[in-house]
Amino acid sequence: MLLTHANLATMTGDARYGLIGDGAVAVREGVIVWVGSTADVPREFQGETADLEGRVVTPGLIDCHTHLVFGGNRAREFEMRLEGASYEAIARAGGGIVSTVRATRALSAEVLAQAALPRLDAMIAEGVSCVEVKSGYGLSVEAELAMLRAARRLGGLRRVRIVTTYLGAHAVPPEYAGDADGYIDEVCIPALRAAHAEGLVDAVDGFCEGIAFSVAQIARVFDVARELGLPVKLHAEQLSHLGGAQLAARYGALSADHLEYATADDARAIAAAGSVAVILPGAFYTLREVQAPPIAAFRAHGVAMALASDCNPGSSPMTSLLLAMNMGCTLFRMTPEEALAGVTRHAARALGLSDCGMIAPGMRADLAVWNVGHPAELAYRIGFNPLHVRYFSGD
Image (tube, rainbow, N blue to C red; front, side, top):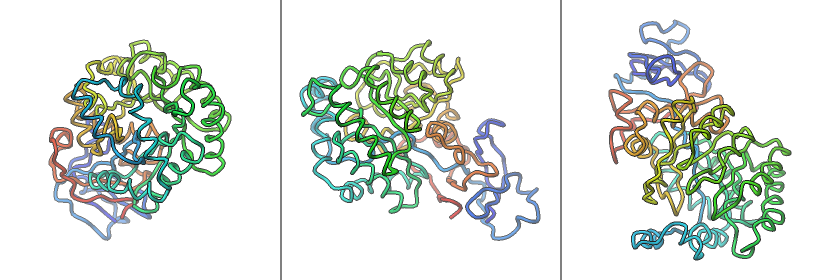
Protein backbone atom coordinates (compact mmCIF):
# COMPACT_ATOMS: atom_id res chain seq x y z
CA MET A 1 0.00 0.00 0.00
CA LEU A 2 1.19 3.50 -0.86
CA LEU A 3 -0.19 6.67 0.72
CA THR A 4 0.63 9.80 -1.30
CA HIS A 5 0.18 13.59 -1.29
CA ALA A 6 0.07 13.86 2.50
CA ASN A 7 1.47 16.31 5.01
CA LEU A 8 3.42 13.82 7.09
CA ALA A 9 3.98 14.66 10.75
CA THR A 10 6.54 11.89 11.18
CA MET A 11 7.44 12.95 14.77
CA THR A 12 10.97 11.76 14.14
CA GLY A 13 12.57 14.91 15.52
CA ASP A 14 14.31 15.72 12.23
CA ALA A 15 12.34 18.98 11.83
CA ARG A 16 9.35 20.67 13.39
CA TYR A 17 6.79 17.85 13.77
CA GLY A 18 9.21 15.91 11.54
CA LEU A 19 7.07 17.42 8.80
CA ILE A 20 7.35 16.25 5.18
CA GLY A 21 5.13 18.25 2.84
CA ASP A 22 3.54 16.37 -0.07
CA GLY A 23 4.91 13.19 1.45
CA ALA A 24 4.33 9.51 0.86
CA VAL A 25 4.41 6.37 3.00
CA ALA A 26 4.88 2.84 1.64
CA VAL A 27 3.57 -0.07 3.73
CA ARG A 28 4.25 -3.76 3.35
CA GLU A 29 2.78 -6.47 5.59
CA GLY A 30 1.76 -3.97 8.26
CA VAL A 31 5.17 -2.28 8.48
CA ILE A 32 6.34 1.05 7.07
CA VAL A 33 9.06 0.36 4.49
CA TRP A 34 9.65 3.80 2.96
CA VAL A 35 8.90 7.46 3.79
CA GLY A 36 9.67 10.53 1.70
CA SER A 37 8.39 12.93 -0.93
CA THR A 38 5.60 11.80 -3.24
CA ALA A 39 7.76 12.86 -6.17
CA ASP A 40 10.55 10.52 -5.05
CA VAL A 41 8.68 7.24 -4.47
CA PRO A 42 10.91 4.38 -5.71
CA ARG A 43 9.45 2.27 -8.48
CA GLU A 44 9.46 -0.84 -6.28
CA PHE A 45 6.80 0.74 -4.04
CA GLN A 46 4.44 1.78 -6.83
CA GLY A 47 1.16 -0.10 -6.58
CA GLU A 48 -2.14 0.21 -4.75
CA THR A 49 -2.25 3.91 -3.92
CA ALA A 50 -4.41 6.17 -1.76
CA ASP A 51 -4.20 9.88 -2.60
CA LEU A 52 -4.66 11.76 0.69
CA GLU A 53 -5.11 15.14 -1.01
CA GLY A 54 -2.94 17.13 1.39
CA ARG A 55 -4.36 15.77 4.63
CA VAL A 56 -2.16 15.56 7.72
CA VAL A 57 -0.95 12.07 8.66
CA THR A 58 0.40 11.33 12.14
CA PRO A 59 1.43 8.15 13.87
CA GLY A 60 -1.57 6.42 15.44
CA LEU A 61 -2.18 8.07 18.79
CA ILE A 62 -1.10 6.28 21.98
CA ASP A 63 -2.91 6.68 25.30
CA CYS A 64 -0.18 5.67 27.73
CA HIS A 65 -2.07 6.08 31.06
CA THR A 66 -5.65 4.85 31.49
CA HIS A 67 -7.79 3.03 34.03
CA LEU A 68 -10.15 1.93 31.27
CA VAL A 69 -11.53 -1.20 32.98
CA PHE A 70 -13.81 -0.57 35.96
CA GLY A 71 -17.35 -0.99 37.26
CA GLY A 72 -19.90 1.72 38.05
CA ASN A 73 -19.32 5.46 38.01
CA ARG A 74 -18.71 8.26 40.49
CA ALA A 75 -21.05 10.98 39.31
CA ARG A 76 -22.28 11.60 42.88
CA GLU A 77 -18.71 12.32 43.98
CA PHE A 78 -18.48 14.83 41.15
CA GLU A 79 -21.43 16.59 42.73
CA MET A 80 -19.82 16.39 46.17
CA ARG A 81 -16.63 18.03 44.94
CA LEU A 82 -18.67 20.84 43.42
CA GLU A 83 -20.33 21.24 46.82
CA GLY A 84 -16.92 21.72 48.43
CA ALA A 85 -15.62 18.28 49.40
CA SER A 86 -12.00 17.55 48.48
CA TYR A 87 -10.81 14.45 46.64
CA GLU A 88 -8.84 13.41 49.73
CA ALA A 89 -11.82 13.95 52.08
CA ILE A 90 -14.07 11.85 49.85
CA ALA A 91 -11.46 9.07 49.75
CA ARG A 92 -11.01 9.06 53.53
CA ALA A 93 -14.80 8.84 53.99
CA GLY A 94 -14.97 5.59 52.00
CA GLY A 95 -15.54 7.08 48.56
CA GLY A 96 -13.00 7.57 45.82
CA ILE A 97 -11.11 4.54 44.60
CA VAL A 98 -12.69 2.27 47.23
CA SER A 99 -16.20 2.96 45.91
CA THR A 100 -15.11 1.85 42.45
CA VAL A 101 -13.55 -1.26 44.02
CA ARG A 102 -16.96 -2.34 45.31
CA ALA A 103 -18.54 -1.95 41.88
CA THR A 104 -15.64 -3.63 40.07
CA ARG A 105 -15.46 -6.67 42.34
CA ALA A 106 -19.09 -7.45 41.52
CA LEU A 107 -18.33 -7.96 37.80
CA SER A 108 -16.72 -10.82 35.87
CA ALA A 109 -13.85 -10.32 33.45
CA GLU A 110 -16.24 -10.67 30.52
CA VAL A 111 -18.66 -8.06 31.87
CA LEU A 112 -15.78 -5.71 32.71
CA ALA A 113 -14.50 -5.98 29.14
CA GLN A 114 -17.92 -5.29 27.68
CA ALA A 115 -18.38 -2.31 29.98
CA ALA A 116 -15.05 -0.87 28.82
CA LEU A 117 -15.82 -1.17 25.10
CA PRO A 118 -17.75 2.13 24.71
CA ARG A 119 -14.82 3.98 26.27
CA LEU A 120 -12.34 2.13 24.07
CA ASP A 121 -14.45 2.80 20.97
CA ALA A 122 -14.42 6.53 21.75
CA MET A 123 -10.61 6.43 21.83
CA ILE A 124 -10.33 4.45 18.59
CA ALA A 125 -12.66 6.94 16.90
CA GLU A 126 -10.06 9.65 17.62
CA GLY A 127 -7.21 7.82 15.91
CA VAL A 128 -5.88 5.89 18.91
CA SER A 129 -4.04 2.69 18.01
CA CYS A 130 -2.51 1.73 21.38
CA VAL A 131 -3.97 1.97 24.90
CA GLU A 132 -2.39 1.19 28.24
CA VAL A 133 -4.89 -0.31 30.73
CA LYS A 134 -4.22 -0.56 34.46
CA SER A 135 -5.71 -2.81 37.11
CA GLY A 136 -6.13 -1.38 40.61
CA TYR A 137 -9.87 -1.41 41.24
CA GLY A 138 -9.99 -5.05 42.34
CA LEU A 139 -7.59 -5.00 45.30
CA SER A 140 -8.02 -8.72 45.88
CA VAL A 141 -6.09 -11.44 44.09
CA GLU A 142 -9.02 -12.69 42.01
CA ALA A 143 -10.47 -9.25 41.26
CA GLU A 144 -7.11 -7.89 40.09
CA LEU A 145 -6.68 -10.91 37.83
CA ALA A 146 -10.20 -10.39 36.46
CA MET A 147 -9.36 -6.79 35.57
CA LEU A 148 -6.18 -7.79 33.75
CA ARG A 149 -7.97 -10.60 31.91
CA ALA A 150 -10.61 -8.09 30.82
CA ALA A 151 -7.90 -5.73 29.57
CA ARG A 152 -6.24 -8.49 27.55
CA ARG A 153 -9.65 -9.45 26.12
CA LEU A 154 -10.15 -5.95 24.73
CA GLY A 155 -7.30 -6.50 22.28
CA GLY A 156 -9.25 -9.39 20.76
CA LEU A 157 -12.51 -7.48 20.57
CA ARG A 158 -11.16 -4.44 18.73
CA ARG A 159 -8.31 -3.67 16.33
CA VAL A 160 -6.18 -1.92 18.92
CA ARG A 161 -2.99 -2.70 20.80
CA ILE A 162 -3.47 -3.16 24.55
CA VAL A 163 -0.62 -2.81 27.04
CA THR A 164 -1.43 -3.94 30.59
CA THR A 165 -0.14 -2.51 33.85
CA TYR A 166 -0.56 -4.09 37.27
CA LEU A 167 -1.61 -1.43 39.79
CA GLY A 168 -2.33 -3.51 42.87
CA ALA A 169 -0.73 -0.77 45.01
CA HIS A 170 -3.51 1.68 44.16
CA ALA A 171 -5.41 1.93 47.44
CA VAL A 172 -5.86 0.02 50.69
CA PRO A 173 -9.17 -1.90 50.55
CA PRO A 174 -11.62 -1.64 53.48
CA GLU A 175 -10.77 -5.09 54.82
CA TYR A 176 -7.16 -3.93 55.33
CA ALA A 177 -7.95 -0.46 56.69
CA GLY A 178 -5.01 0.70 58.80
CA ASP A 179 -2.83 -2.20 57.63
CA ALA A 180 -1.29 -1.17 54.32
CA ASP A 181 1.74 -3.39 54.91
CA GLY A 182 -0.48 -6.39 55.51
CA TYR A 183 -2.27 -5.69 52.23
CA ILE A 184 1.06 -5.45 50.38
CA ASP A 185 2.21 -8.78 51.84
CA GLU A 186 -1.01 -10.78 51.62
CA VAL A 187 -2.71 -9.43 48.46
CA CYS A 188 -0.67 -7.04 46.35
CA ILE A 189 2.51 -9.06 45.94
CA PRO A 190 0.77 -12.48 45.64
CA ALA A 191 -1.58 -11.03 42.99
CA LEU A 192 1.40 -9.65 41.08
CA ARG A 193 3.10 -13.03 41.08
CA ALA A 194 -0.10 -14.77 39.96
CA ALA A 195 -0.74 -12.23 37.19
CA HIS A 196 2.82 -12.52 35.94
CA ALA A 197 2.58 -16.32 35.91
CA GLU A 198 -0.56 -16.02 33.76
CA GLY A 199 1.13 -13.62 31.33
CA LEU A 200 -1.19 -10.75 32.16
CA VAL A 201 1.33 -8.05 33.09
CA ASP A 202 3.49 -5.80 30.91
CA ALA A 203 4.51 -3.34 33.67
CA VAL A 204 3.95 -2.56 37.36
CA ASP A 205 2.60 0.72 38.77
CA GLY A 206 1.82 2.16 42.20
CA PHE A 207 0.16 5.18 43.81
CA CYS A 208 2.65 6.92 46.09
CA GLU A 209 0.51 9.33 48.10
CA GLY A 210 -0.68 10.04 51.63
CA ILE A 211 -4.05 8.44 50.86
CA ALA A 212 -2.38 5.40 49.32
CA PHE A 213 1.15 4.02 49.86
CA SER A 214 4.49 5.31 51.13
CA VAL A 215 7.79 5.30 49.29
CA ALA A 216 8.97 2.32 51.36
CA GLN A 217 5.82 0.31 50.62
CA ILE A 218 5.98 0.99 46.88
CA ALA A 219 9.67 0.03 46.90
CA ARG A 220 8.73 -3.42 48.21
CA VAL A 221 6.38 -3.93 45.26
CA PHE A 222 8.99 -2.61 42.84
CA ASP A 223 11.54 -5.07 44.23
CA VAL A 224 9.25 -7.93 43.27
CA ALA A 225 8.68 -6.40 39.84
CA ARG A 226 12.45 -6.24 39.36
CA GLU A 227 12.75 -9.88 40.45
CA LEU A 228 10.15 -10.83 37.83
CA GLY A 229 11.85 -8.78 35.12
CA LEU A 230 8.98 -6.32 34.79
CA PRO A 231 9.45 -2.57 34.19
CA VAL A 232 7.86 -0.12 36.62
CA LYS A 233 6.12 3.25 36.55
CA LEU A 234 4.59 5.37 39.27
CA HIS A 235 1.77 7.77 40.13
CA ALA A 236 3.99 10.36 41.83
CA GLU A 237 3.69 13.80 43.43
CA GLN A 238 0.06 14.26 42.39
CA LEU A 239 -1.47 15.64 45.60
CA SER A 240 1.67 16.27 47.64
CA HIS A 241 5.43 15.75 47.53
CA LEU A 242 6.37 12.42 49.12
CA GLY A 243 9.45 11.48 47.11
CA GLY A 244 7.75 9.29 44.53
CA ALA A 245 9.53 10.88 41.57
CA GLN A 246 12.92 10.18 43.10
CA LEU A 247 11.84 6.60 43.84
CA ALA A 248 10.76 6.13 40.22
CA ALA A 249 14.11 7.48 39.06
CA ARG A 250 16.04 5.13 41.36
CA TYR A 251 14.25 2.15 39.84
CA GLY A 252 14.76 3.39 36.27
CA ALA A 253 11.01 3.63 35.79
CA LEU A 254 9.51 3.85 32.33
CA SER A 255 7.58 6.87 33.57
CA ALA A 256 6.57 9.01 36.49
CA ASP A 257 2.98 10.21 36.11
CA HIS A 258 0.99 13.27 37.28
CA LEU A 259 3.91 15.14 38.93
CA GLU A 260 2.03 18.31 39.89
CA TYR A 261 4.18 18.69 43.01
CA ALA A 262 7.46 17.61 41.42
CA THR A 263 10.48 19.89 41.80
CA ALA A 264 13.43 20.88 39.66
CA ASP A 265 15.49 18.25 41.51
CA ASP A 266 12.88 15.66 40.59
CA ALA A 267 13.07 16.76 36.95
CA ARG A 268 16.83 16.35 37.04
CA ALA A 269 16.53 12.84 38.50
CA ILE A 270 13.85 11.79 36.00
CA ALA A 271 16.02 13.02 33.15
CA ALA A 272 19.09 11.17 34.45
CA ALA A 273 17.06 7.96 34.72
CA GLY A 274 15.75 8.30 31.17
CA SER A 275 12.18 8.16 32.46
CA VAL A 276 9.24 9.91 30.81
CA ALA A 277 7.09 12.47 32.62
CA VAL A 278 3.46 11.62 31.86
CA ILE A 279 1.31 14.75 32.08
CA LEU A 280 -2.35 14.17 32.96
CA PRO A 281 -4.36 17.39 32.57
CA GLY A 282 -7.73 15.61 32.84
CA ALA A 283 -7.26 14.93 36.56
CA PHE A 284 -5.87 18.43 37.13
CA TYR A 285 -8.97 19.87 35.45
CA THR A 286 -11.53 17.59 37.10
CA LEU A 287 -10.12 18.06 40.60
CA ARG A 288 -9.74 21.81 40.02
CA GLU A 289 -6.13 21.68 41.11
CA VAL A 290 -4.01 24.81 41.19
CA GLN A 291 -0.52 23.28 41.42
CA ALA A 292 0.65 22.65 37.85
CA PRO A 293 3.44 20.23 36.93
CA PRO A 294 6.83 21.93 36.39
CA ILE A 295 6.80 21.92 32.58
CA ALA A 296 9.59 24.51 32.35
CA ALA A 297 11.85 22.36 34.57
CA PHE A 298 11.13 19.30 32.45
CA ARG A 299 12.08 21.26 29.33
CA ALA A 300 15.21 22.66 30.97
CA HIS A 301 16.47 19.19 31.92
CA GLY A 302 15.43 17.49 28.68
CA VAL A 303 12.71 15.29 30.18
CA ALA A 304 10.50 13.65 27.55
CA MET A 305 6.88 14.56 28.25
CA ALA A 306 3.96 12.31 27.34
CA LEU A 307 0.28 13.21 27.56
CA ALA A 308 -2.56 10.81 28.39
CA SER A 309 -6.27 10.82 29.16
CA ASP A 310 -5.97 9.14 32.59
CA CYS A 311 -9.44 7.79 31.79
CA ASN A 312 -10.93 6.74 35.14
CA PRO A 313 -14.31 7.03 36.87
CA GLY A 314 -13.25 9.46 39.59
CA SER A 315 -10.63 12.05 38.81
CA SER A 316 -10.58 12.01 34.98
CA PRO A 317 -13.75 10.62 33.37
CA MET A 318 -12.35 11.47 29.95
CA THR A 319 -11.67 9.34 26.88
CA SER A 320 -10.40 12.05 24.50
CA LEU A 321 -6.69 12.30 23.76
CA LEU A 322 -7.44 15.27 21.51
CA LEU A 323 -8.91 17.07 24.51
CA ALA A 324 -5.91 16.06 26.61
CA MET A 325 -3.69 17.68 23.97
CA ASN A 326 -5.67 20.92 24.12
CA MET A 327 -5.62 20.88 27.93
CA GLY A 328 -1.87 20.29 27.97
CA CYS A 329 -1.47 23.43 25.89
CA THR A 330 -4.06 25.67 27.55
CA LEU A 331 -3.56 24.63 31.17
CA PHE A 332 0.17 23.91 31.22
CA ARG A 333 1.48 25.96 28.25
CA MET A 334 2.83 22.98 26.37
CA THR A 335 3.31 23.68 22.69
CA PRO A 336 1.14 21.90 20.08
CA GLU A 337 4.25 20.06 18.91
CA GLU A 338 5.01 18.92 22.47
CA ALA A 339 1.41 17.79 22.79
CA LEU A 340 1.54 15.72 19.61
CA ALA A 341 4.89 14.22 20.58
CA GLY A 342 3.29 13.46 23.95
CA VAL A 343 0.63 11.22 22.41
CA THR A 344 2.94 9.58 19.87
CA ARG A 345 6.73 9.29 20.22
CA HIS A 346 7.00 9.99 23.94
CA ALA A 347 3.87 7.98 24.79
CA ALA A 348 5.44 4.96 23.10
CA ARG A 349 8.59 5.45 25.16
CA ALA A 350 6.50 5.69 28.35
CA LEU A 351 5.23 2.18 27.56
CA GLY A 352 8.64 0.81 26.64
CA LEU A 353 7.61 0.40 22.98
CA SER A 354 10.13 0.99 20.19
CA ASP A 355 8.07 -0.04 17.15
CA CYS A 356 5.47 2.73 17.10
CA GLY A 357 4.95 6.44 17.76
CA MET A 358 6.79 7.66 14.64
CA ILE A 359 6.37 7.44 10.87
CA ALA A 360 9.63 5.83 9.82
CA PRO A 361 10.84 2.67 8.10
CA GLY A 362 10.58 -0.34 10.38
CA MET A 363 7.73 1.10 12.45
CA ARG A 364 4.27 -0.45 12.62
CA ALA A 365 1.92 1.10 10.08
CA ASP A 366 -0.37 2.50 12.76
CA LEU A 367 -1.39 5.81 11.21
CA ALA A 368 -4.07 8.47 11.66
CA VAL A 369 -5.19 10.61 8.71
CA TRP A 370 -6.77 13.94 9.64
CA ASN A 371 -8.97 16.42 7.82
CA VAL A 372 -6.68 19.30 8.78
CA GLY A 373 -3.99 21.23 6.97
CA HIS A 374 -1.45 21.50 9.80
CA PRO A 375 -0.76 19.27 12.82
CA ALA A 376 -1.18 22.20 15.26
CA GLU A 377 -4.92 22.03 14.54
CA LEU A 378 -5.15 18.78 16.51
CA ALA A 379 -4.36 20.59 19.78
CA TYR A 380 -6.09 23.84 18.78
CA ARG A 381 -9.67 22.64 18.40
CA ILE A 382 -11.96 21.80 21.34
CA GLY A 383 -14.63 19.11 21.12
CA PHE A 384 -13.99 18.48 17.43
CA ASN A 385 -12.78 15.21 15.91
CA PRO A 386 -11.21 15.68 12.45
CA LEU A 387 -10.18 12.04 11.94
CA HIS A 388 -10.52 10.97 8.29
CA VAL A 389 -9.34 7.38 8.58
CA ARG A 390 -7.24 5.22 10.90
CA TYR A 391 -4.83 2.54 9.72
CA PHE A 392 -3.95 -0.25 12.15
CA SER A 393 -1.01 -2.36 10.99
CA GLY A 394 -1.62 -0.95 7.53
CA ASP A 395 -5.33 -1.88 7.31
